[in-house]
Image: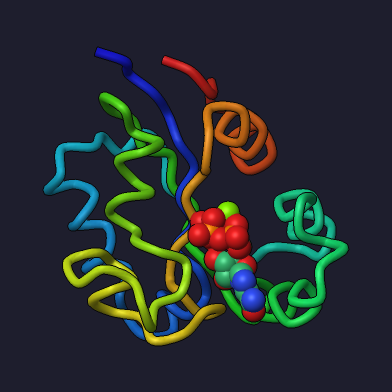
Length: 140
Ligand code: RTP
Ligand code: MG
């Protein structure tokens, strides 16, 4: 067993489309534990810190605009192999080709407005959890 914590964002499209309950339910039904949950709106500084690896890319300006376009729901999820587990539940980045059965595969049809974010490694999870939830321990 490798109990991990990971950061999930239900992005502004998920809140606008009324899919927060549906998405949260998928993580809960899988067996992941909800450790923290906040409904909040990102700031430019928070977006730039969160997406540090992407800020120089061509797609960053529209991504930044999107992530700041309304409230989102930030979650800390915990469980055995939680980081990879969330990535599998989320599906491929591009909703148009994401696997059926995944959140993006079932519910998204865009490469940008793809409903969810999940940390992509233990290092990313530690970094992102500290950014979004400074008062929550990033590890169990
Ligand atoms: P995420 O970080 O949101 O969990 O998604 P990911 O790892 O699957 O994808 P990543 O490569 O980290 O990209 C971060 C987010 O940027 C948007 N994106 N737009 N070519 C594009 O227009 C493009 N590529 C990526 C998506 O919202 C993606 O989730
Ligand atoms: Mg990513």
